[in-house]
Length: 157
Image (cartoon, rainbow, N blue to C red):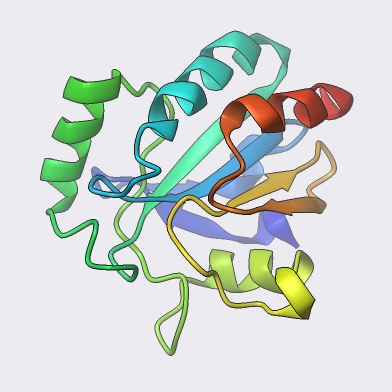
């Protein structure tokens, strides 16, 4: 179950997903040097606009796709703050595929499969939507913008 997982914030603090009970959560594997990186702007807008309605964006940097997140956790945090004023939680850099897949992402991928039933994440900015009951209700492709997701998001708030 989603709430059984925990993850480390960028600063090393461990956070339980139980902290997000009764919230709608959008989980994103991010990268600072990707063609989709400007989505940080839309993610921040969604986070600010809907936080009061029980919504949160959780960002998990990953360097597995084209080496597009090579920085340290501190450098990633500085990049997000300087360029996007990101106020949503930023977690430690993780792996989303392979032998060292983060357990949270292994769970998300098994609950919301990708194209043709594949579990593998294909690129940066793949997104998972979790409803207020902790169900993984949708996987979004990297090219699915926050603006596109917003329409469906409102159905869960």
